Length: 126
Length: 148
Image 1 (tube, rainbow over the protein chains, first blue to last red):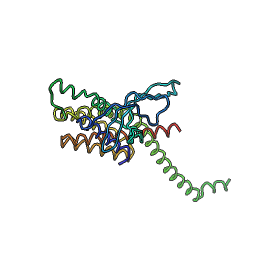
Image 2 (image 1 turned 90 degrees about the vertical axis):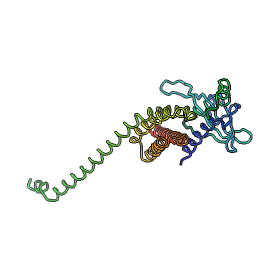
Image 3 (image 1 turned 180 degrees about the horizontal axis):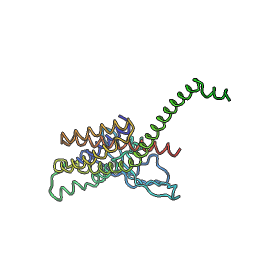
Image 4 (image 1 turned 90 degrees about the horizontal axis):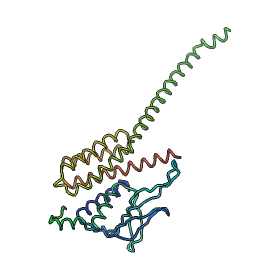
């Protein structure tokens, strides 16, 4: 199993645990790793899983288009491993599924699903 | 004049001609095989990015409904079938390493379809994510080689 496949398996597991409310995410200050000066972190959430602090960032990356000689913004996500002080130690390689993970993490951090269950009187779906 | 005729009519010249024909045949087969490979590679590559994007959409859709697996089994099966169709179509256009990953992904999807339980469906989800990631890496490598 290559690193990228292991990371993909991790992302799948994090999505599942977040959706099942077994993993809690909190908003945090922008965590940056390997970004160009013009790249912007829009939102960032952090969690702890198996003794490791992890963060997911939503980014706008400035991408130069050589055909039109212009810069455009590309929406992207980054999964990061943090040390005990919250500093970025490692940026996982670009992998699919991060948009689903970010969506699940931001929803969990906002408590939307739990709030809806409370308002509508439903039992949790997990 | 006789010397020239003897030169071209000699048995050794005929032997050279035969040998050259055999070499030409080998070169023709090699060129035809290379053209076939190049054609196959480019035809396949032309659709791969589009199919990768489609697979990413399907796997994102799968993630959103897997949490409600018990009440949305039919939808899960339908999205898994869409993923299977795309992976199956991509398989023939890939090199051997990626083909084996495609086969593992298809096996995980089949197992999930047979078992019809949430854990197997999540395993298939992880397998598809890994497959898409490997394809994207291979596409980045190919792009880098082309731009060199």
